[in-house]
Length: 286
Ligand SMILES: [Zn+2]
View (tube, rainbow, N blue to C red):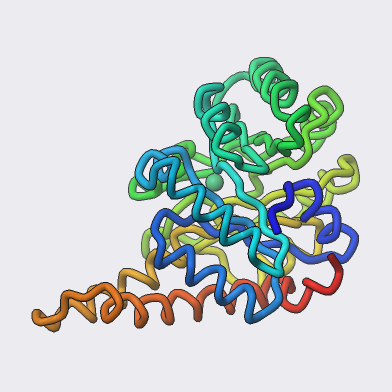
């Protein structure tokens, strides 16, 4: 069934695991995500970026909600990296149960102001709000954007920000970048910053852009207070790598022949992530 972010992450925070947020913008990928999460009894967040929403269209969201409401799993429908009120309003009208307002490139004060405005229009409708403080790096292919360099979240600022905005969840920058990292680039998570933030802030924390970080770092982050991890590039890369293989056979053209193999490869990554975040078999806690 559809739930909001506050509901799904409350359980994750109490039980020290992270719920995966998968960015999807096609039916094969969406159905593949749902099928694998149901197999593993993992709660799931379906994340859609405004550019992805423009691509799939509002009617597609009706299908997602229908599928989510028929599922045994708690499912959040989340707008990833909303940056304007118009984008947030579109998501709310479409029935999203959670939105992110990413005003991290604005000044601290402006970020607080816009986040509070979004909360004032979302909360009465039971829609959760994720804010972001600090900036996450980017690669040029990534749909989510980001800054050219990572600005680490200042723990004291995080405390002030949460107190002043009363946001439901907070995305923090501790050394990840969006997209797949270039060869030779070794990201390093600053777990000490996460621990400091965790001591000062009592809401679930979110990690974006962990695709290229080693598993050991991600699981350490989950053990230290990350309750939602965004996954986008990793599943898309697995899906389309296989897709390229399938299409080397020039004769294939039927979607029901092409996509099952791609879905299977994507699901291997999904299963790996779910186990890494320890969200498998957590349905029983809801
Ligand atoms: Zn992101």
